[in-house]
Image 1: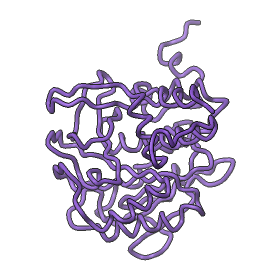
Image 2: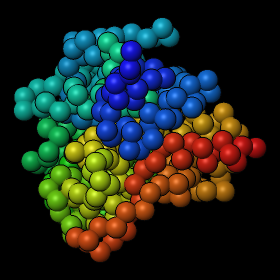
Image 3: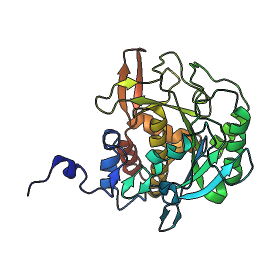
Image 4: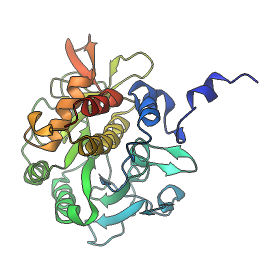
Length: 311
């Protein structure tokens, strides 16, 4: 019996990828195949997702892994309790962790064995008012609890949907800087309006990486981008681009540890070193709309670079 192209492309994989085209373009599928005996795909690490709330009753988040629950913690900055349930108009946070962390009924996110901490710190992902104070509170919760839950990365998913060419000073800057000092990665989506003269806040902030998008089918640049976009990741929306690279951060972090890679030659903090590796190993794309070149994430090449230079 002949094997169909679809089934052949899934051969050797631990499950069905959350998005086959996106994962294939950034090297995740081949990475899963080649490093299945060396990496654990986020096991033992926690990704904190700061969004407009998460419905923990959905089966995707009620699932448990052999070593513990998928959702290891929840927090609501408004009520100061552990229930991050969204309140209308909030809607986005429930699904925001799927691209990075899903492990349900055989469908897998990039770092499918990780834990997640769900934090409600904004009323709606596309901000309509100043919510800097509650975001700062959410970031502080991560600072206070990162050792307890081994939080190694933060998905700060909020967008103000404006075009910023430079950072905008706010009260989130101090906790962002502290998280960078603690070697905890924080990134945000650049936005989805096809802006070419700036990116959304907080992606534009100094200690928050701004993640832009490219198209999986042809590697063309799209969505919001400018010179302050740090890197591109293939997806149809930059919230997914950001979620994908956050899964990649957990994987690269483990690879660095397993390989004994001397990361301090790449940057003063681990997030800066990982971004340097992503940029060095990524695919260079030219964007005619801005006249700029960007690097597009290639997670397989980033991990291969680390293992090739192991101590």
